[in-house]
Image: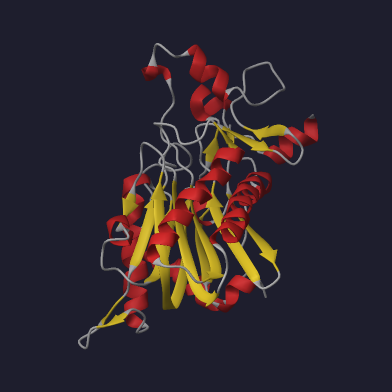
Length: 320
């Protein structure tokens, strides 16, 4: 059992035919939450409640979904499932769960008219409570992910969802990230781009930044419909204000792994959840959080499998 499983449950619903899905992170007892939106095209639910000045004290769930704006409907199923299981704020007449979420654009892959709905959210919750192991790659919110879309879908590559845990003595930070960037994925451990925009007839990958510069006078030529979304969990105890700051800093992991990051065409959004179990310095948690996000992005990309024109890292690497 990984450390995060003592406080959080993660479940995924995957529609491999329509190539979409959702991932839920549940915390029955409620935890302190924060959020940071850095991309220019976000689709989110209830993020204002996580602002430091607002009254939301605890979060009971995070929903990460495909389906663009339509996929936010998965949150409804999560809220209903938690209410039925008496998880949330006890209001006397019922339990009201605090569930936040974000969706990514995956409508160009698979079936565009099939999106995660309330039943998808419910099924992801059921899987979370069944104890099934987390799967990276083409699962959950990562099912329809792609990267390097600036040069068109025929020259893009497959993204996915990944999880990574960083530890230092009793402190741990776990990141779950769905990788659906307009840009390329860079693995700094080996010092090269592992997935991204391709050009016909060339074996190399990773042209996104160059293409952005080439199209500097024609923004309409750029390929939209992207977003990196995720959730960072820790056992550290912080105030709500600090959790929001941690969410800001966690985006450095995206900046280290995605080139370019946080573009106008991405809706990059990270949630942070703190189980409030141990005291830790903010700097120590920040260091672990950034690296957990970076490695989750790389893992999700490496675990993805080819779908149609969207070649995966595994196949590119095999043939290189």
